[in-house]
Structure formats: C-alpha cells, structure tokens
Length: 405
Image (cartoon, rainbow, N blue to C red; front, side):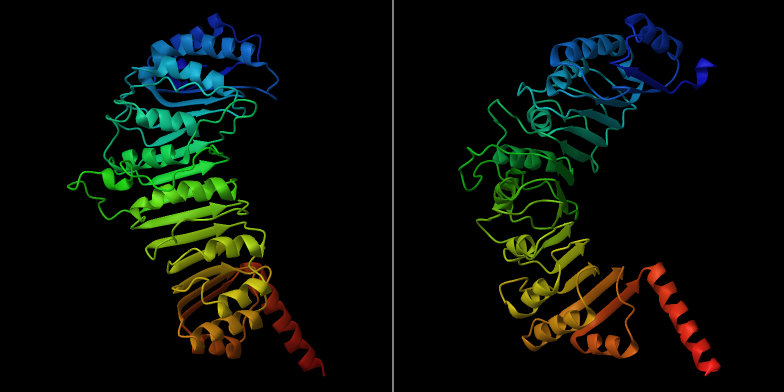
C-alpha cells in the first residue's frame, strides 16, 4: 500500500503483535501526512489497570513525536487512570490542524487530575473527556487560551467513581461552564455523570456565569446543556448552580434520565427552552415541568407523555404556566385527549400559540384539525410516511368496496 494515502494510525493495545517497533514503523511511513490517531481495543476489553496503563504509555511514547500533525486524537479504553497517563504526553503540544480531542474511559478507577495543562490547538472544535478531566482542563491557567473564538462542543463523558471518593462537585462543573462561556463555547453535553453528594451549597457566588467581564457579550448565542443517562439529584444540583445566572438564553435537553429526586431551588426561567427525550414516567415529566416557567417544550419518545400527563397539562396551572409552543410525537395518547388539553388551556387563558405533532401519530380528520385550531393559533400536524400511506390505502380500499356494492 502506498504510504502517501495513510491517514489513520490505529493502535490496538490488546493486540500482542502491535509492538513498539510496529507502531513506530507506521508513524514513520506516514510522516508526511496529516493523520488521525486512534488508540483502542480490538475486541472486548479484558486488561487489568496496570497492564492497560503500560500499553497506553507505550502507544503514547510512539505517538508523541507526531502529535503536531494529528488532526484527530482518539483514545477509547477501559480505565480513567490510562487517560490521565495519556494526557501527560499531550501536555505542551502544538497541533495547528487538530479539530477533535477525545479521551474516553468506562471505569473511574482514579480521580487524579488531567495532565494536559496546555494545548495549542487553534482549530479545536470537539472535546470529549470524562467530566472530571474536562473540569480540570478548563480550570488550568493556559489550557483553553488558544481555542478559537467560536462554538466549541464540550462533551463530558462517563464519570462514576466506585470504591473511591467522588470529588467532582456540581458547582465546579458550573464554574467550568462560566469559564468556557468567556470563549463563546455554548454547547455542553454530559453523559452518565455522577456528582458528589457532598455539594451542599445552594448558589455560586464568585463563580457564577456573571463572573464574565461586563464587556464580554454572548453574541446572541444560547447556552445549550444536554444531559443523558443521569439521575435527578445530579441534574438538579448542576442546574441549581448554573441557574445563578438565570440562563438568560438557553436550551436544557434531558435524554433517558431518571428524574426521581429532581428538585430546584429556583424555577427554570422563561428564556429557557426545555427538550425532553425518552422520559418514561409521568411522574418524571411532572417533576421537571412543575419547576419550569419557559415557553417552548419539546417532547420526543416520552412514554410518560400519556393521558394522565395531558390532563395535568390542561388542568394544573403550576405545570408549564407560560408554555406557548409544544412539540410532540405520538405514542401514548389519543387525539381526543390532546384536543381536551388544548381546550382546557384555552379556557384558562393559557392558550397555545403553536402545536407541532409529528411521527407515529393518528391521521387527523378535517373536523378534528378544525377543533384544534379553535384552541391553538397554529397547528402543524405531520404524521409519519408509513401512517399516511396506510391511511391512503385504507381510503382506496373503502372506495373500492363502495364501487363493488
């Protein structure tokens, strides 16, 4: 194979034939190319921490001289202790073309600080680190100073210490959000993160989002916080601290989370859009919407959005009191129940301005849509293609039957 076309260098740490000499040979053969580096397992990860640490160290020793021409760096392993080791080799490197940095682990066996204190990556737009490493990285004095003045997507990946103290505080992560916002970083994703239960302070004083200098503007961009596979106490603890700045323009997205124990000190403000995905219970939906004053609610694949929740939306004035736009798909409710909810809100002076319904939903008749439009200013009813086709087929069969009679 012509080495001029080698763009990926993949080092399988569990493959015994991938020796230092083999790795160095591939790096040397591709020395004139811009490369992507991927250090990972080739199969199921079965190493103990000590052996994985040694193999990752070997891979990083081979990769270190070539990091300046690396456009993507990816490390996906089992233990966080290995990502800490790898981070020390990244420290102080200059990579003018690097657009993505990803170090992901599954087992939090260490709470050591992330070691890449300074990275000069003017084109870096994607950063995937475990939650503690991301906080460590942002908190460093020089770690983020060379980032581009544009939207950087920060993804905090799995961090759940077991058998060792959890030192990750929700207020520390909120502080990291505040620091990152100074660089107009507006998208944060947290997946499978657990914060320490020793975080008892209710607000952030000197480290709120208001610590940005007055002259630094948000350039009209909203802050986006995406939360996936997390529990109610960790979510509410984080939002309680971020709420110190009221999230003046924000989108909070919660996907596949257990919201039991969710409790805020202050309600989510009017400027906050709320997106909920894969919320399974009505009680979980009620837990968060009862503490939200926003105007835009987006619900997707939520089993908890059913007859009971539609009744609550229509009758309980504490639930979504200012909601003007509702976007849903249809799995666990009927059209009659939806119409009743819209009518109840209209009669109570809480009329919807826009209703968006799409996906696997009933094909509404003209009379039903007219009823909805009596209680909602604008209705966008978009059933999925399969349902529309089925409805059309039923219509054709009905017409055929009539002809035969």
